[in-house]
Length: 106
Image (cartoon, rainbow, N blue to C red; front, top):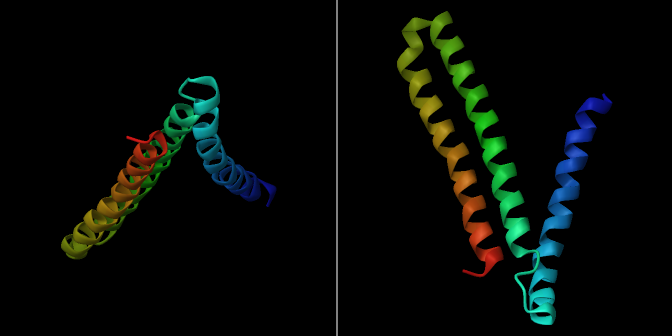
């Protein structure tokens, strides 16, 4: 049971920590004249989103292939739903890219 709570706790900690770093980056950049933490938090957001998206797409693809192998008659419906799922998963990664651009201020 603890194995399920550890990843959820890490994701929650990152979700709470990264916006604070992004907001603090603006003040740090003004004070030091440097880039601050915005670039690092944007890179972490993109890395986590890409990794989670890749794992989700892999699981969805495996489930779709397994479903088509078990029931070839429903392959068309399964394929359509799998494509829809993959598009929605990829859109979340694109949203993370947009958020990273907003964090960087570009």
